[in-house]
Image: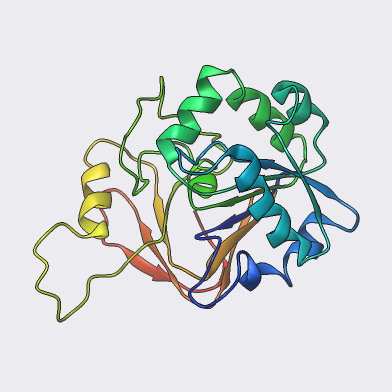
Length: 231
């Protein structure tokens, strides 16, 4: 059965990497699990090895071990993984890397077969139908915007509400998502910092403290509270 944990972010202000999820991770991944980390979202400034070390330290707080999917034969590492964690960075870089190396479909098949998948930020974008609702700049051009399609909607991690007293006149996240719906029909869930989704089979549950904002094409957005979501 499909098992996902999709977080808006990997780090909250004033906390360590993944600290706010420490109590959730052992139950999600299971004891004595080695998590295969997918570091491909980082476009530069940090190596895949260094990024994997960050994930290793974060997941060690929950008693979990980490190996980098890039260390050795990537396809074989995906096939043999006990669990996955895809970290944040640039969603377009991540998507391009997976598509161009024929790893996207391989990863999807493995997760649909029941291998636990955790994403944060770009890794959470990757779980949707497409990556068309990322906040990232298209610094590279993937051959396709299609994502893992593990859930029947798109996600906008790091969703931000307009500030009532701000003089900023640029477009809001809500404006951008409404523009997406001029050409696309799937729902989009604005996932605020400190919240995450738990997916078991077809059940999608919002967890954490903030509410989320649900956008549907040709409808007014609505706030959804933690609990099982109808998507």
